[in-house]
Image (tube, rainbow, N blue to C red; front, top):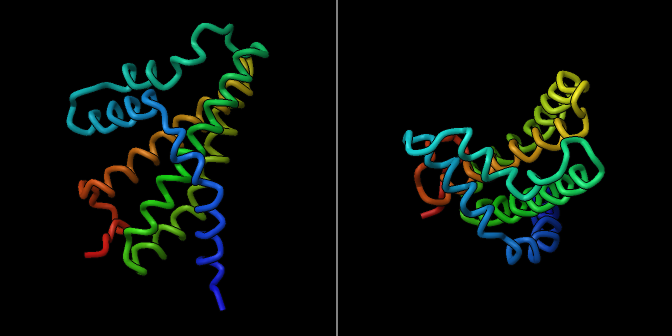
Amino acid sequence: MLSARAIAVCLLSVASLPAAAQESSEQTRVVACLSGMEQGQTSWPECRSLLFHPCETFPVGGEDHLTCLAEQKADWRAHLDATTLTLNARLTAEGSGQLTDLLGQWFGYVGNKCNGVAQEKADISADAARLGCEISEFAGLSTEFDSCLQGKSLSPYCIVQE
């Protein structure tokens, strides 16, 4: 009998297959920029500019801007899902268990954090602020997972199989 975790990983893998192929060069540049922040090679303003470049020509909070942000969020979610799938396949059972627990908590944290950001920016555009926060968080976690895959993470879950 398959465990709930194995079923979730299988479902995630099926949903993520097209996403892995869709990784854009913009996402690659953003991940590289965010990784560079740890070494002081890049800064958040540089990375933020790259991250939101696809939507920068639209008026903030307008329909086109929100549509663009929603598309970017979907792309980053697909990227995160694909990266999570790859990472889970390379982790030990212990690391995979820790990662599953972490992700269970992380999505709630992001929801709460981004709802708070939306409330703070309601006078500009709560929806744009929420989407922007979610995009930033998805990109940040993708970068952390990439760091683990490259053997550069010290996070407790990052126990790669030998």
